Length: 306
Image 1: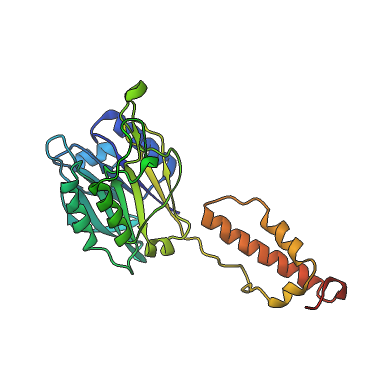
Image 2: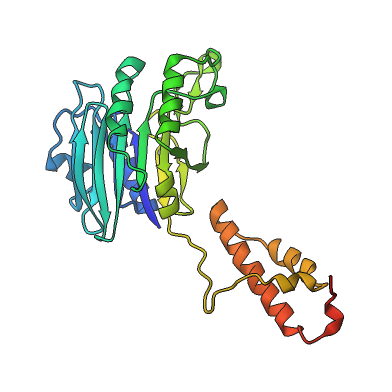
């Protein structure tokens, strides 16, 4: 399991940010961390050591005064990073895991003005390839539907929403959020003025979904910022039966007991992401079916002909 954290921390030099970030690292052991809206125009080695520790390498996008800023940090003993492009609203890098696997990672902190945001859609799209696993994480400052918002004015479709949705579709990106609070941002006001929205997301392209089958995203507790940290779990979960390969045999359909064996095996509890559960259920059901029916395949009473 590979963990990556993306968080709009609203100021990387705040003591509260440092405390919560260190707690997140202790709890989830990420190999990479992406901090957004850092509000730091020049990031030094000393800043990184105080923020996260001396074992982390880094690259960054400087803020403009107290606005914006991105820092990408990674543990060099596990991954190596080559920066491909740096712009005011995003940073794109090629990441290699132990020199065996490579993928593209993009960190995004989108401008509130949709006209300025267009630079993201155009800039990142040129680096996307169907045969390269791609992960895009960040604060997109845009929602896609009423389901992404609670409180405030009702959602209205707009050119900004259309452009965001079109970019997701054309770029073959998929939202992999699976658990945690639905809304990632809150304006921290009380009563009727309180607004919740899902501004932060993690996208994987189809190649990344295949390469990291079983991956998921958790929205963590909102502490020290008005945004939730996002925890990406990248997993290699493939259906690889132990021993000889299991294959379904058409002749098994002729056994009277086949249905009950399948039902019993399939409904046994299983933990994990949806893809993990599906893989384990398939393997367990095939194994149970093969074991039970081959054990009794000499008993004619358990078989009928069609």
